[in-house]
Length: 530
Image 1 (cartoon, rainbow, N blue to C red):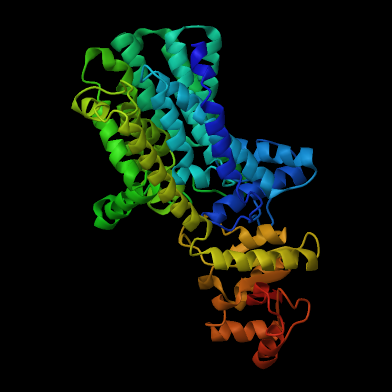
Image 2: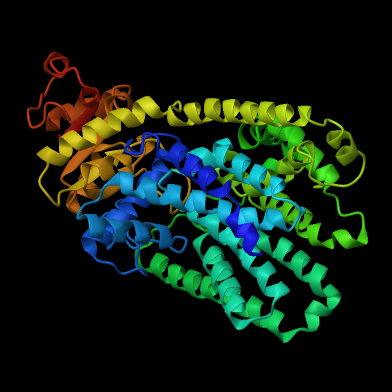
């Protein structure tokens, strides 16, 4: 076992993966899934500013409430806040760096799982290399979101459970329980890991594992943190009516399964798997790995968990189709498994007995040229990944969020500290009774408040929020200029831009002349006193 941890290739691979993730580490949170990153960063900053009470995560779109919100167990934003405390400020590059570290560390238990699939180190090395460069791992491994920590805990949960099955020591049992318990609490959909965990137990003990008290104790202790946390989170929702829609009963319904009956859903998911999750070359490698690693022989039971893992992930897509369609990072759990499958044919090309059957024989016959095929395959995956990551860093919403960033930073300096702000913005989930709200402008203004959507724009709505304590209304100009009656009402109050504030205008001609004196993107965001 010691030799497995002394592989000289592992540290350079980890450093290379970390370097990829730390490129442009100080970039603002306006790239792909900007809203989700900003919400996580806001929770971290609120811990830092308002107190380190782990059990009471707070968001900015709180109105007059305390801001505590029903969400997944907020371990990642809390750890980010601890870094803020050490550094003495809320620096986003620290949050990106921590996410990158968690993402890269996932390669260590992934390497260990790979070593149990093949007699040599090549499969593990290739799996680590592929995992570190696949687009979702590369990009979301640096995003300010809990996904990097979730993947680390997921793979660690499988590895520690397997180690406990091999040697029933209490220390290994404790590690297995801790990894699984934290994993399920940090992201409740990771319960799909029950599929590979059962397969591991079945491979080791047969169906007799059901009669082992230690297995039931493991199940109880692994689920207990989630049960306690989500019971507590429901209480937070009852307190403030603020939620991220964890179970879809109040907010964004990510569990809606009507999509499964549409061809568009299946086309979207297929294209994303081919071009984004594993890349075109990766698809070929994964297919070859699935065929070559199929546990046909009795002595291949140790591979059962791979296919149970795959089955669990497919069930997860079917159970949470709307979330998977809309949110690309929901497919991140496929990446470590895809890396293991894709690595098997590459290891065979390098002469390792990684698989069985005709595929293994065919690939071994490549001889010395196998190294070149491996190099070409890895280079192809890297090139495709770089292309997709570039698109993620400049998504279609980038220009809008760039404007929000500039306006927010300008208003942070100009607005009174502690001022409550109403933000006008679009929201795909405006029909939800209790929806998560757009956090970007509030976050970069460093203020708390409300979000209303264009369908709510009216003088009466602004008056009602003003009566609750709101002092300003901030909105992108494009959302109101097409609403003549509402625009005329705002002019009666006096309209400024984020660039011109506190100078304001009461007629359209003066507004256009004044706004055009400023060249920055913040001139496109309007502000009105309530």
